[in-house]
Image 1 (cartoon, rainbow, N blue to C red):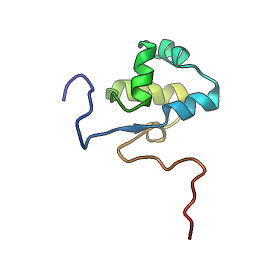
Image 2: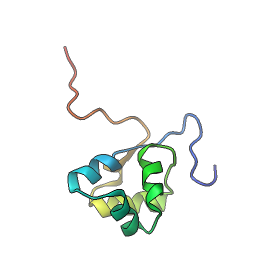
Image 3: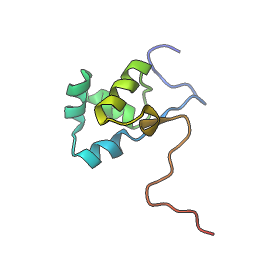
Length: 85
């Protein structure tokens, strides 16, 4: 699988938009810090593009969190959603 494109069944989910919002960081600011085009950040956030391992680690480092806080192979639970018994 080249170019970072996702293949059906190989989706990578992320919390980039949530982390950006929490910290008041724009897509452009994050892109500049990572050395990528700001549209790439949008593609990543929407799950249209899976980052390389190197980029994923740089994103986690930027937000100062473990990579598994930012990325997952399974969907993250929605914030504020609770299991109703």
